Length: 494
Image (cartoon, rainbow, N blue to C red; front, side):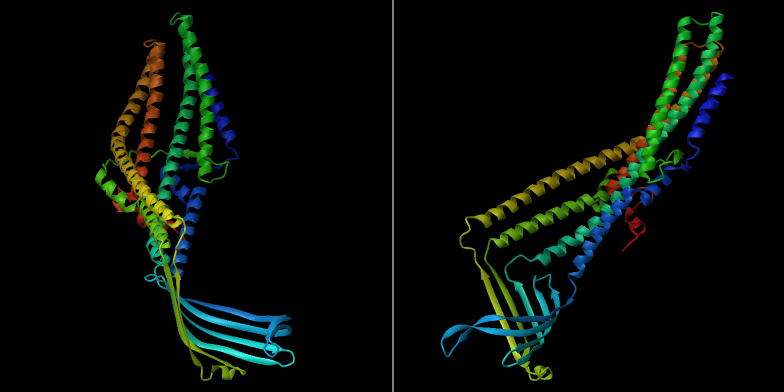
């Protein structure tokens, strides 16, 4: 009767603690779903993807024609300026007062192949001088077509065309990768809480069991059925079970807080977990996992991007160490007149051609040094990429091996858990009727606890291994398809 009262008091205490808390039941799949939609980590990863998305949109926009209006609505001067007097052959200061305005409408197009810029523009200007003789004049360029580029310099557009699409593709795969990483984190928190709940429930049962066994031991001690040492051991078990309960309660609260916080739920939320069933047995081919990783893993795209950017830097420094020439040319029409309508009549042809040269003569080896540094950095990048890909390959092979082993471990752990529970129940019954000693009872209890931990750890390691493989390969081995099909479902913006 006393034992039942203690159990009821413990349960009542738990209910009082959770009176103002919302209690929800979560499965592993539901926990992952909440984390992917509501966690702060998911929000962060989505915004990181959107930053890459808009950067790619900017790159695409720079490849489209752009229309720009540059205007000076009004520019007014009133000052003294120096002028040359041809009659006296001297410079004199004269008062000047003028009004000026202009507008230029230009359509430009950048060319990736050549790295140049093609443009078509039109311009209108107006000038009015005040003073002793007022004078107004319009200046027009009805149409002008031109082109300019560096002949031997670095072509920024060509390299951006190679790098930017790769960066965006990497960002998409990195987003899926981050989703799988979130799932992996949730699994760890989920099973940590599952272990804490199992330990807590077992601690509650142990308190009741230890009290019952101690009460039985007291009766048996009166009739010399057990020694005083055995009775003291039973009393020690009562004290240890109470201490274990307190530790289990603290561990449960800590694990509960970790999962609730990560899922971004209300702090007062209490979670009851439902462990996943025994997973379907299937093996993963390590060669298939390696191939999927090479096709999908963002790290491989990051290596390609890093290599391209290093090669780009080599070309940029190499070209800057040589002479460069720039070319600009335009053809159009222009006219001036005192009246606006006359400024567009009978325009004269306007031609412009310019060639500029930049030849380094003496720079004490600065340009050559920069080019050599860029080449050495490229060699370092190639070596580093090779090392990282070897490590990634080894990691994938080891994770596949761990996953394939975990399935057998789950079956063994489940069988051991059932056997340990039956042995513990039988040992208690034998102890009650005096056919078992304290040592056997303690040993069977420890075996039950160990079997419970091993089973939950086996489930945890299985799902961690599986989602780690999904993260590394971005491939669903159950449905046998790439996780890229989930991208449109996970990204809410385009």
